[in-house]
View (cartoon, rainbow, N blue to C red):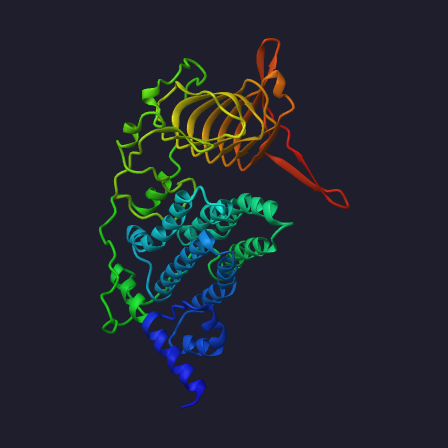
Amino acid sequence: STIGEFFRETCQFLCYISSICYTCPMHYILCEPIIMECSSSTGIAPYVEAFDRLLNGSVAEFLRYSKILEGDVKTHAEMVRAAFQAQRSFLVLASQCQEPQENEVAVLLKPISEKIQEIQNFRERNRGSKMFNHLSAVSESIPALGWIAVSPKPGPYVKEMNDAATFYTNRVLKDYKNSDTRHVDWVKSYLNIWSELQAYIKEHHTTGLTWSKTGPVASSMSMRSVLTSGSCLSPPPPPPGPPPTFDTETPKDEGTAARSALFAQLNQGEAITKGLRHVSDDQKTHKNPSLRAQGPPVRSPTKSHTPSPTSPKNSPQQNHPPVLELEGKKWRVEYQEDKNDLVINNTELKQVAYIFKCNKSTLQIKGKINSITIDNCKKFGLVFDNVVGIVEVINSRDIQIQVMGKVPTISINKTEGCHIYLSEESLDCEIVSAKSSEMNILIPQDGDYKEFPVPEQFKTAWDGSKLVTEPAEIVG
């Protein structure tokens, strides 16, 4: 009869239908006291209530700032919201059901894994977006939702993913700090999500996800029940439509093996700067359209350098056609395998080169070019004459770079194994590295090269007024 009773009855109905699946942050803000009352009366666990506060606090704020920026950022943010909602459903399941076998957990994690993959695929499909750094920050850090599959200490894993985002959020701040504060607010709101998630984990799941000690053992059927009635303890009422379906096929590998496979080691590579020869026109996709017709449209796959709640790998690996073409001002070199004779000629100062997913291959770039990016490559060699901007190496392994002329800056990020051969002209080059290992700079001396390792370990001390950081001595 009264407005308060109306809201209370409405919230109780929502609890019953979707275990308080908040799709509107404003709804939560207006009705929080009533919702908390409904939560207590329907037996929602305290750690689920705490997660709701995170959803309707920092996540809702991030959505608000993303809507202000609109475009790709807004679309991406909606995917993030859906991923957090999928995680909330899993937390409700864990709060009411006992932990199942590990292979069953992998199946139950599949909805979250699919949301993460969707977010990362969106970034790969929109590499030309003017908001690419925003999309990259989200894509690189969203695997943090995989904390529920990490033990005994999931908190540090979330921090690691948060650090991965800062590489790109720093770029956003650099671009917009003095021109558009909306982007600065967006960065703060996004990083705040992971800071609050770390605090949430520390309070409720310090040593890993807390499962119920009573109730039935969690299964795909109980997950369906959670999605419909908000409880796995009793059969759900008839839903208004068909319930969501899940793939309950038993995975061939258990969850641990699936996650460990992401970190499989590579074999040793071989020399990369020998045997270069020119690529004939019939091998170049930009001069031979028939090559582009041999396969489906090129889509960059989800990166696998960070752990996430992986589901069983039932789908076969896609084979992408190799690409070497000039697209506008960008040279695209993608999916090259065992090609040690790739050459780009007739470059112009305004052009850039983007090298993606190339393995056991070598590329020579002749002339002067604006910038070069090596992304997600393994056992790859690059030889170039002159770069006026920057050479970036990201998410790669076993990379060798030889500078024949000049380059002002080389950036190495999240890369294992990188050898850089500098020329006499490029000795003033700045090497910027982060979250990388096995980096060596080779300096020409007396007709040969002398190798110098880049420090990976640092020591920090308080000098009475500030922190002083210096490289730890490398013992050869």
